[in-house]
Image (spheres, rainbow, N blue to C red):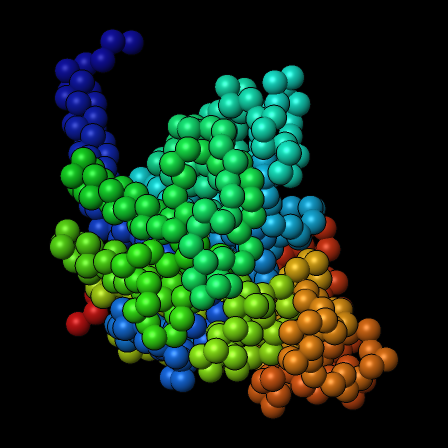
Length: 539
C-alpha cells in the first residue's frame, strides 16, 4: 500500500528525531572523549622501596621532583610488584595478571628470547585504552619476550650466539612487539638496555640497524671501579647508546607527547616511559655524574628524578598538566650488590629497612614505590596504606576511562581509583588478598597483615654465600615447609609462625590453591568503572 502524504510527513518527522538523537549521542560521546585525561606511566627498574627520599627520610641523597610529585598526589606505602624480577613484572603491567596465568615459567629474557608473554588475542592495557579513543606509545625497555626467526624460518631461542642468526627480513615487523600489542608508536630495546644483549633498537616493529658489532664492556666507563657490574658482552647495533640510554628514551617520550598534541589535540594519549634506572650496570649520564654525593647509583636515581621532573614540566608547558594522570612505579626491589654497596659505602638502604632484595619473596624484593598525580582530580598530600600491586594499574586506568573489563581480562587487577580520589578510606581495603611471585615463580600471598610464603628461604637469593651472608637471619622454624608472618607485629619477617598459627596457615594455603589453579583469578568478575563523569575536579 503506498504511503499517504500525512504518513510520509510523520515518517520524515520520526527520521529527523532519530537523527537528532543520534547526533546528541555522538556529540556527547565526543565531549566525553575529549574530557578523558592523558595518561603517563613512568616505570622504573630495580628501584627499591627506600630509594626515594619521600619514602626514606634517611636516604643518602634527595629526589625532590618525585617527592614533590608525591606531595601533589598520593603515595602508596604498601605497593608491590607482581614479581621480583623484570620480565614477569612487566607482563603484569601490560596484562593486569600474574605470570602464572601464562602457563609458562618465570624468567628474564635475554638475546632473541621469546615468544612474548603477551599472547596473541589477549587484551593489553594499550589495547584497552585504544578502544576508548587513545593514541598509545611506549619508549624504553620492553623485556616481555619477542619472536625472532633465522634464515630457515625457525624460531630462535635466547642466548648470545643466536643473536647472529637473526634474519631481520623474516623477523620484522615483529609479530609480538608493542605495535602488535596495542601501541601505535614504540621505540624500545628487546631486553635490559645495558645488561642483556641483544643490543638493538626496535622502532615500530622494525630494527633500523641490526646487531653487527661486538660490544666490549671495557669500552664503557666504570664509575667507582665497580658499578659497570652486569654489563654482558654481546652483539650490538652500530651507534647503540649505553651511558645515556634513558636520555634517549625520555627524548622519544617527549617527542611522542608534543607531536600528539600538535597533530591530535582533541584525542587523549597514553604513554609508557619505561626507564632502565636503576638497573645494573650503573651508568649515569654525564650531566648527572658526581652530583648526588652518594656515588654513581645515587647519581643514577637522581637522573631518574630529574627526567621525571622534566616530563612533568613538559606537561605543564603544553597546558595539559591538570588533565594528565601520571603514575610512577617500579618493577621490583633493588639489586643485591647495589643494596650491599649502598649500605656499606653510603649508609643508604635501598630496600628501606625491609628484609630481602631483588629476586626474594620477602618484602624487600617486591615492595616498591607507587605514586599517582593528577592535579585536576586527585587530592594532594595523600599517603595510602591500601595494599596494591602493579597489576592494579590496568583496572584503575580502565576505571578512569570508563571501560568495563570483561571477566577474563586482567584477572589479577583491582581498581585503586577510589583510594586515589580519597573516596575510600584505608580502613576499608580494596584488596582482600594479593599474590606475588619470586625469582623461581614461587608464591607469596597477602591477606591483610598476614603473609604466607609457599616456600622456604628467600625464594631467590642464596644467603649462605659471599656478601649475602651478612644479611642472613636465623630460621625460627627450621622444620617448616613455608613461612607465615604477621607484618603488623613483625614487619621485618623475622619470626616464622608456620606452626604457631596453624589455622591461619591452613586457611592461606587453601586460598592460595584456589587463586592459583588453572583458570583462577584474584580480582572480582564484576568490575564497574567509575568513569570520568563521576570523578569530581579538585577544588
